[in-house]
Image (cartoon, rainbow, N blue to C red; front, side, top):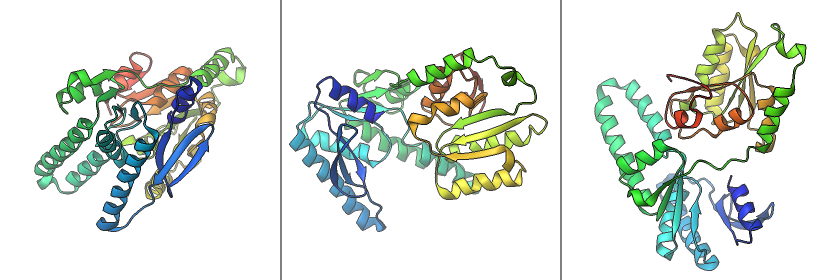
Length: 327
């Protein structure tokens, strides 16, 4: 999305520069887009991390001072880069916009729930303290920006009511997604009328596309396939995540006896992802949290029936175009 946005702006004659993390500080032209990579290499220990963060902040200030942008657009509220960008923009006196399409607290919230489950007696206190800390952190983050782009009504409401962002700073607009390649898939699916495509014996493909993180509940999809032994279905998983969690999912499939019915395809080039929708009979997103769900829009545009959890921004995205179920 960042690349497409930058290319579109450049095509309209608007000078644009993208700043993101890299292994070292460097400059490059990536598919026609000028990119500045700031050093995002891993650090060990508090001292090294503080030094790195200070270096990133100073580098952002230097880029803004030299480039002199009319506006700074931060593409995601997740990761420390969002905070440093807001601070640097304010330091340089440049109007700034933050896109709120993913909850920065989602990973922390998942860890909190796991810790509470392991220590039930501490659950209430732990949840209250952690929730308050997360809310304060997010309030500070959003206070650094002049304007916040909410991608769903649920996020717009949360920004104003829970995170106390002034309503005049928030505007609602969906994610920008190029759907042309997915619409071509839908046209091809509509025109396909081969006898094999309707054969009861043909193995149906259930597709899920997401990061492999605990709150995405890919494990639930694997368990579901294990309960459908009498149906000709297989689960195709597109996406990647921490190696230990991916290993956990593979072991879960092995224990459930469905290794031959669960495919792990890993990460796929976004330019080729439409081919997976073309082969799918059903799309599933079983997340316990989802801010927007771009993959749901892709599935709908590709004409794939879908089932998703009734959580977060999903109901606003899907409406009555799919089956929504309790997480």
